[in-house]
Length: 451
Image (cartoon, rainbow, N blue to C red; front, side, top):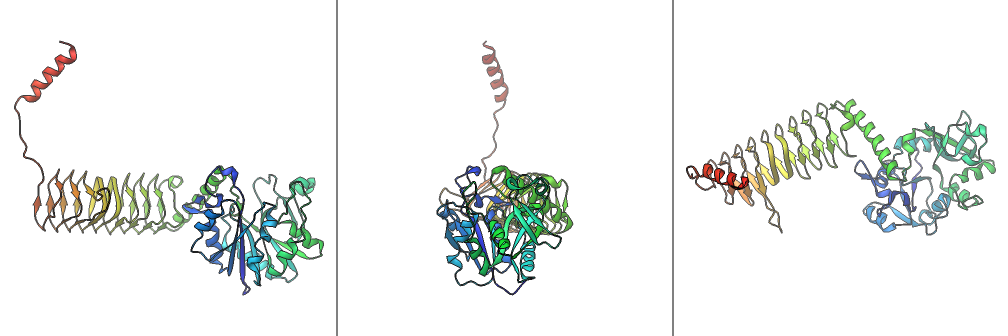
């Protein structure tokens, strides 16, 4: 890296019509985070001094999404090409002296290390006017080609439709991203012509302008996945798939056991320690932290949750934001937690809802128990003490507190506090009517037979 300041221009003015969405294209998520946020986080990690997002269609959505970030906006009223879009940021960068990265909001996976390599190449020779980012795809399709020597110096950039047969044989393709000094980027772009079929001003044409002036331009290569563009739902899904594959590989390299890796889906911020085991078909939403020794059984959905060491989750469990499991605790099949803490070694083994609740150490929550936390207007809290035992099929109507070591009999609907060590039974006395079922069945069978 260099001591020269860095600015970033992110192009996000396009209509994105192929997404067929009322949401701006760059706000669609990958691993639970908007494309634009992926890119903004990347440039922020490089200590970018100024960031300008060029907006157009649905600009208010982007401005709202980036609220709170140190980002400026420039508006491209008329869609006259990528070169024209970059020029719209010139006023916002008046007085800036340093390097300027031009990139795309719908190409969100470029890595900090790659941008750092572009900067290093630019700084390696004062004669280099700009550095282009290129890649070698499995299928060159209709990508523009970069013709360069073994030192990465560009002799020509050519669009596929204008390339010769020999040039089309080159598999080094232009990603569209580039970096240049502030003293060069706008002056070169102002010389770019729109004399092409589309009548647009293309960003890569500034390389042709620079070469025509006898200046040097260079190329840096990156992996194909880093510069995958997203213009449709199918392309969004493909980038998500590739991201998940890399994240699973990283998790296993970090000591996580994934029984069926291809069925586990991570979020961009999932924190998972070594010696965690994850069974098939588990989905992690944003905001999940999992400590060592935890086991996540199959078909569980977890978001906004903190899972402590040596805990068991699932199968078929759901953890929602604010759920906390302390060391050695357990939730089993068809248990849901939301804004609730399950204390050390406490367990809710099946068919339970714990919402707005605090469950003490070693407590046992029987099957079918629910905390009734909402009256249609407000949420209320349930507190269950250490070592308490809640019988099956109990409804705990909050606000309510069950003391340490207390017991609640099965089938109870509890509306009052239970003191420590007490037993609460809330049910009518069982009665019987001798022979009633036999008589009922006989009469019903005759009616059904039409007798």
